[in-house]
Image 1: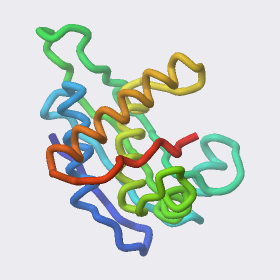
Image 2: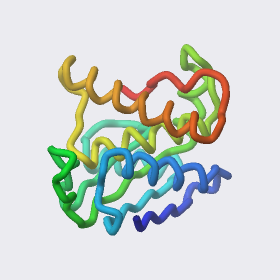
Image 3: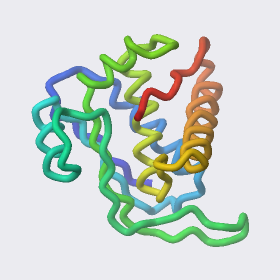
Length: 165
């Protein structure tokens, strides 16, 4: 799995954790090991520009996903996953820090960025949360991936609750 993490935000973030949880999520979703993903960490001003340009919405947001080859997880366990370019995930640590502090289970900016990375991966794989049933599926899968990753690393305490809208 080729995953690039590029921090352009000026904020110190745990890039290794972002890389690790992205790799874990893609493996868990059975994405081809030669697929490629880019994660870019930007400041609030850059995220606001992207948010306006692509979503026509004001202000910075927490995460945006830009799919390339529209890869999907294989439908059956014995299917060979397709290989390709997943796309880009853009994260904003300033928004993540605020959301982590405001969450029901308060958590750090880095924990929020890990959650948002998984959220971005799922969007790249075609998951969405516009409808209640889609939201239940996506957020359930997101929680399972974050919990599995945390358990593998022996991290204690509650996993971050979804703060993504």
